[in-house]
Image (cartoon, rainbow, N blue to C red):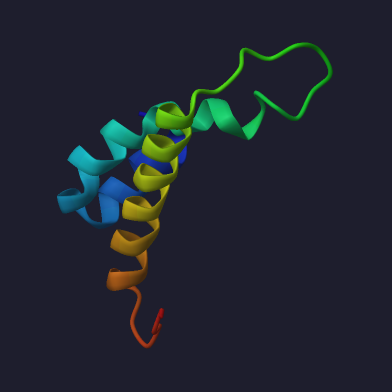
Length: 70
């Protein structure tokens, strides 16, 4: 798990499993940003990646007091 995820787990251990599953999302922070030929992303991989990012986002928003999403 990456540093930020480890810090989040210190505050809420219930997020550890989700954040471990989401750790590969880190790759998308740079994969398509820099020059070169990145591997193409399949439709299925894009949908799965987006779904995981949404799960993490929603889990974090649920835990923030006074924040309403949707």
